[in-house]
Image 1 (cartoon, each protein chain N blue to C red):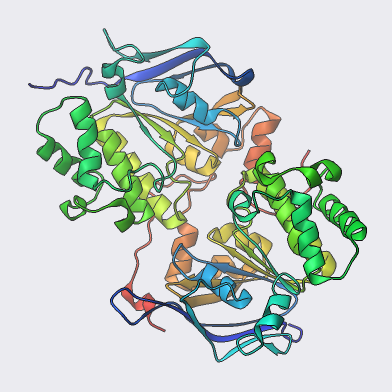
Image 2 (image 1 turned 90 degrees about the horizontal axis):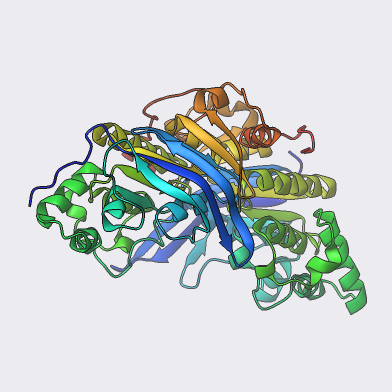
Length: 280
Length: 262
């Protein structure tokens, strides 16, 4: 691994509990990321999305983020002024969200949203921004960028919307892309197309990527390294190629419980959750 | 009033030449299929292929322009649209977060179909339905927001089963669930089918899920039938249509060296 782009050490995210006190949803996550593809996998509630959001500073109001280290390219993210954090967010660190239906602005045309992102982070003229947005749409393999530029999010399909979002996130040329379930809302065939586009752009620009998903097999086929999270903690870190040799019973359980085309197993093995997985 | 099962060997479903049109848009064009009594039949396709529309047309939620739906496997079976038909054919929807009334308890959710169909012994039926889907009586007076996704889907399945139907229409019953919870719900559906002799008509975009649960399946694209194949043939990669092969390869996952799709 080259020098770390992002260093996370003992990251904790907590929300106030109804009975008073705090509920920790991320409990001491540590990892370092170079210009590579890192996958974070877990079930709903495992804290994978909260980890991604904390890095970007998008933890919901009321939440508490603490860490020994949370550093991006030498900048201490928890200690830097809000203005600098804002500049990083969407500029040098970008995030692709799950569902284009909910995460694009419904009352702005797709083109206007992309132009807005670009002009927030770089001083370019209106005309140049427009041209760059059209190029970005073409780069995510949209056939008629001029037409899609004028469309509103409700007028495009899920796959098209997700490609538009990727175009928007990459237009400010970020160095780190956090993709939170970028293809879960899409059909399998469209899914692969979107992944292929994202893969090409990430590899071509030498970006770091954090790929958050519940789909262990998808993540392992796409990333170099995988962190498996359970109940707010990383239970296993493993090279994607070694996934079949995973040691932790939770990782094995996740791999096992999927129905597979090639073999029929009735009934399917289910996860037997053990309390000791909660402890470090 | 004692309630008799209409046919002990089960009831199947036959759909012939189904055509559904919305405002000039042909959502389904000449689709025919037959689910034998006790069989589990899958519908596969991308979004917009019309697979959910088939289910919706069967239970009267989509306008049928042309075509016929009928129950098979017995004499004097109820006709579509009748109350008796709706009792035999029940549907489980995709999103357990959207298909349960947020301000009704599980008890009230399960009591409603009983009230509609005028069935007696609501108390006993609700208790049995909850046991059937593996939820204890402790869940009976909870609200949907107090349940996890898998528990909600169990409630939705209990709501469908409480009328003792013979045919269950399943619209992506596990796609909103985690992989580990999906395995639990698939096992539950399989056990229930064996226990009650049900026929399933199941929609999914996930080929692996459909081949796991169904014996035969139909691949659909743009409102039309692409092919009908046996699950065992699919598992052995013996498919005819190019489109099915493409879906099959897509479900294998991402490959960096993969060729561009045809």
